[in-house]
Length: 267
Image 1 (cartoon, rainbow, N blue to C red):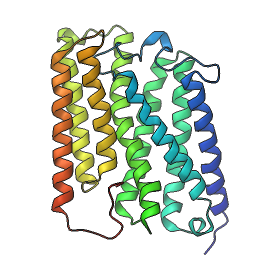
Image 2 (image 1 turned 90 degrees about the vertical axis):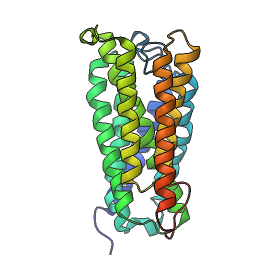
Image 3 (image 1 turned 45 degrees about the horizontal axis):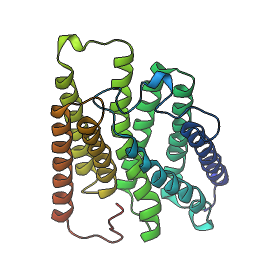
Image 4 (image 1 turned 120 degrees about the horizontal axis):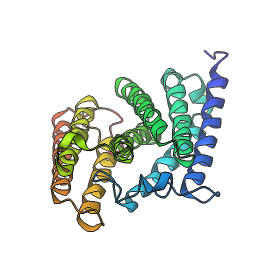
């Protein structure tokens, strides 16, 4: 049955999507802002730290934003207004959109230290949304792609972005790694990112979307460490190894599970 706050939820998601799109234009430099990789003194550039991915990696945002726009429109359909799954997902998705815009603003205004709690909170909200998609079932293939696929891609990429962001802030503050070699720290952080990818594969029962975006990000970390100004062969090898492990675990889990209705490669 319709509830009084159903329309409110849909409206909040729609407005949040608009804010996120505006933020993306600012972050790209298209609306007068400084491109993210050049903002905050270049702390988030491809050669700032051994964990930073190469520039082309950020092209995945086009797919993520396209999915988020599709979701914002799709959830306005009458059938979704009273859907229990969308009632649970609407506000977490809206929160992620607002936090994404807030993160861009912190970087644009050189508030790099503030960007860490913002992106960590964004990651937590996306994990929340992801777990909802895992524990509930989509109605059809369209929902699988638009909802589960988008949230999965979003989460996988933000996992890599969080590791890169935290590392960038530590480097900007002059953190010396307690005397541990930079390459060793890089390998350790990448290993943690790979472990997160494995945990997502287990929690998601072999879902491909989060693994695909996380591996995309790590693959471009490897490219940056082998071809950029900041060369680190150990970090590149660790990133490639993490990609291989995450993909093997994800595919193995997916093949080991019995087929279910509405299961598709988007999940």
